[in-house]
Image 1 (tube, rainbow, N blue to C red):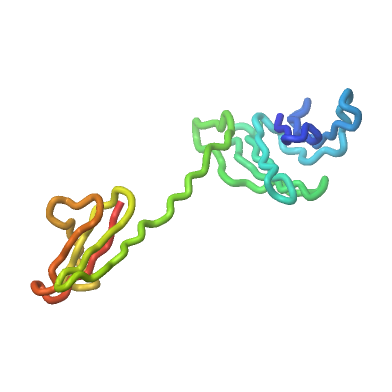
Image 2: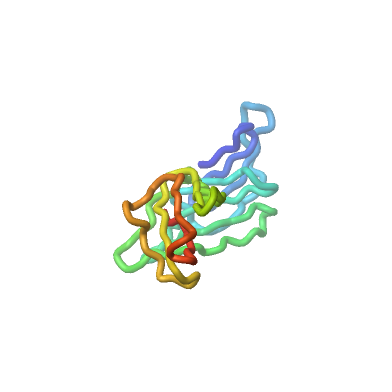
Length: 164
């Protein structure tokens, strides 16, 4: 079963394995609005963040059950196969995990006389090369946090980047 945060919409894997969309109309009785899919459903979860909820479910098919998604637009919304279990495998559950978005590191450069000062946030390894195409090697140390000072006198040209 998957339920929205307003407690007004749930999806239920009903008897016979069908997936039903239901609403709570009077806080006492759930009413079956329509059967969303005839695909047998073992486990399900739903993403209610968009305009239309997206249901993710594992099916009851044997011998190769599936992970499917359904965008709930109406009763005719199709189940789209995301993955099929392999030989001697069965999908047994589904859960959402936290999404981590990591911004790429930013390398800033400033000049101080004949020196170039490189600075960045976070723990990233500084690499350098004498050609923009590389090969890039870790700066001696290795240097994991800024600032890093490099002379512009020798070698005459250096390229820098960060790696995780």
